[in-house]
Image 1 (cartoon, rainbow, N blue to C red):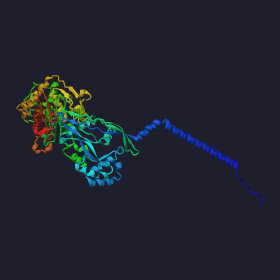
Image 2 (spheres, rainbow, N blue to C red):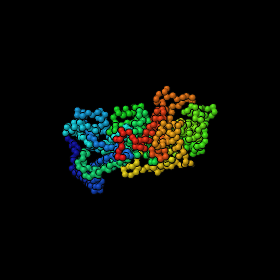
Image 3 (cartoon, rainbow, N blue to C red):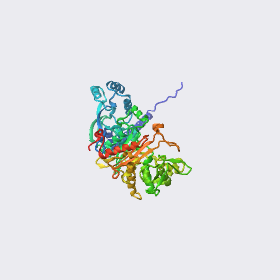
Image 4 (cartoon, one colour):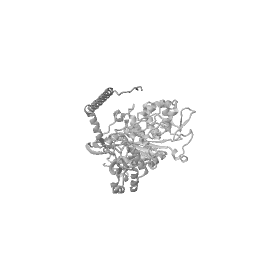
Length: 624
């Protein structure tokens, strides 16, 4: 039997292999320990300060405390925008285990509308710090507060907080002048310091509230607090008190504002009154308007839909954005332009027929008085508002002198210093028409502009500030709302705060034009002679703005037209004529007769100059 080959184990070789593996494993372990120790050394020694800071940041949180918002006063110290304490129902979501169940429980206690829940759910999705409360229902009544207080012990995450909310005590009449605040949106946070507004409830949206947001808001307070891992506040480490916002003192006269608003009656329109000596806006009315208090805590969908869908456009600020043909109120300025450039004189006489023609066989541009006015001079053209005089004057001048002169009075510019959103209107030029319509400027275009029609469009604020410049003999102030910001006078950047002098070749033309405008009231043929009988002199000019164009030989008959096609009624004026204290522009949309704004202006003059307001406005006197 042959011997088979047998394999014998080599224990020596296996031992050496095992030793090599153990040695390699030991080296690997040592390397890992070295790396770990090096990492620990790096983190604990080299990067100690960095990670100490990060640890503190995880433990310490900065929380802002919004400051009380500055108040807004009229010229007599009456509060127009106040802060009113309210009690609101708030929720801390992190403390609520079942939000759906909480909704059912709360609905059994007090009435919470669907829109309030929707608004809460929407804000719940927005960024906020942990354990920050969210308002569910604002301005709890005493009865609602009592109902919640009874069951508060079993409502985890629910609390009643005392808050300051913005309040506008005089509502609609001041809405477009003062503006309003509203709930902060993500878009709002893009233009402000997010940290400062972290705990704020609202922000200025429109009007004075929007323009002076920085000054009214103040400086937020800061608290450094210690929080746990879930972000819940455990203790306060240090704090810095908030600095209240600055109070604003306006030129606005609350009684004049409310009186002007009421005098418009049921008409849509605007009234702007300015102090010619300062450019301060005494009244800025746009009617119809709205209750600004609706917007403070977030307007409901239903309320907003009513305002948006109204045909009268209550949200539209006519004083700032309304574009109107200035009509015959432009004639004093056109006459001064003609004098300035040598196209007119006070002594030259003109035979005013009932129409004017550029060419003998061309279109007839009709005067408001079909039979004409006969022989007149420049002064008489103002007194009787002779259209044909300004047809021929503007035809001779052409658009370039007209544009250059009227621009000195603020037409075609956004001239407000401290209200955003004002329209520039339209002061046409040859270049404008070429760019807009690819057509040259025609003589007929100038003829229409000569009586404040055609392409020309101006806002009530523009016409009012131009009138104030006329009253002050060329001392033009860009209109402004604020007089004092805190304890300091309001200041504005550039152009000396929007002040410049309009210098005429013959400065005597200011007085001569004022005398002509006085005779609009005192002359037996003056278009505003109904205003006679005051103890002071009024200088004024009426206007009737066409809503639609008439055919060459078509006559205007208001009785056959829908009211929305009636002419606009306008008036500019200032008083007393020798030393003006107030200038006014008023427009009644589709008002027809210019007697309406003229009568309104006279009533405002009487009230403001003699402090002779109806007794029902005594509540608006302030701290006079």
